[in-house]
Amino acid sequence: MIIKQALAQLKVKETWLCDPNRMKVEYDSNAIYHQLMPENAPQVYFYDDENYIYGREAAPEDCTMWKADLLGGLLDFEVARKSIESLVTVHNVCSRDSKVAKDFDSKEVFYNLRISPYIEFIVGKYPQLDQFAKEVISDMMDNKISLVHGDFSPKNIMNGNRKIWILDFEVAHYGHPAFDVAFFSNHFILKAVKNKKYAPSYLNMLGYMLEIYFDKMDYMDKKQLENSYVRTLSLLMIARVDGKSPAEYITDDSDKDLIRKLGFTIINEKIVDYKKVIKLVLDNLS
Image (cartoon, rainbow, N blue to C red):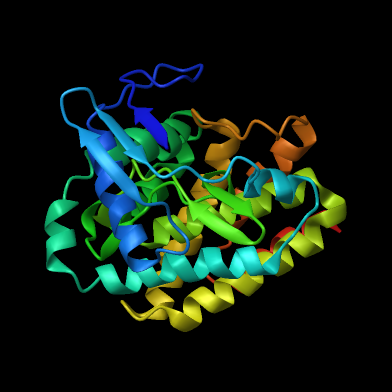
């Protein structure tokens, strides 16, 4: 069993406060993932309202973080398939669930942990992004389309003998699923920049997962989703260099400059096609 308790002040360099009741959000959303994809998400056991503590099934001790596997050059397409199919299944099913919409109506935690420290924070550094960022923020905050994980990334997916455990649901809310797809995709682009020798493989895997996702999603117009996804992705790329939570493995200044360049190119050239994004990244890494 794993026991988790929320902190009001997150353990990062910048001041970053958040309501500890996000543990209840995590408990409830973890339960939904387990209900819909029991083979890919842990079972939940209890929640303590008074102390913001919840307990869930632990992944086996010998499993590994998918992020670590990817950074080490181990790209398992079966893990990739299970991960993206879990995400699109939850998005599709919950888009038609009025109870989930009501239960996850609040976006306060999402705003405090994602919009403010990622997107709004970089606007302070790059005022020229103001109008573009306002449009993306409005897209993410005003739309109520489905259950959004909010932290869907290889860091929060454990892997053991090709079985996966999707974790860390505390940013979940009923909003725009484009955020999940963009947040997830960003990690593969960052790893391609970090480990350039594996870049074609990372980007091939990303293209494979996006093809599955867009083929299976049925909750809104695909082109509208793709537009929102790519625009959100561009800001998240810049945010993982200049936001409150920079990617810890992007350390070289040249890599940071490249990520900024890619993000701004997507914005300035008004790219809204994910295949063009992948080609842009690959061309700049060749």
